[in-house]
Image (cartoon, rainbow, N blue to C red; front, side):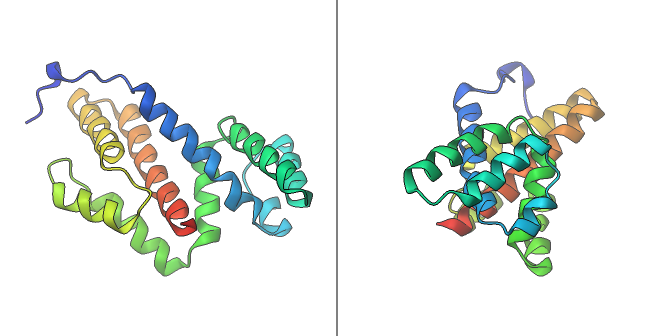
Length: 169
């Protein structure tokens, strides 16, 4: 049983920074999509224009600068939809099923599953996963269905993000 009086449920600056860095790193696989795949992304016209511009840049320095720009713009889009769309372009249906199975396997008291996940996906961090699971448990404790849905969506997006980024390493 979790003693909620011992937990400060604010998201740490470190976790916010890690989340922002992960989103920025997703700009690279986004840039590698075909024009057809880019047009199918659930994003704004402005984001689409910036991403298309990135695909056309040949200078390494300019490309790196535009990747950072696109990475910053990701936070202004619907992160969950964008990550899901990118995820579906990177993996086969069988791989998607295996990766998404982790969502139901996690339990805040199951350290072995946490370790196994972090071992399989090199970009995953135990503390980040634990924090996401803690939010799910907190939402259940508070009987807050809206927070629960948001927390579960955050966990699903995190799993997809680290799967994509682990594939790049």
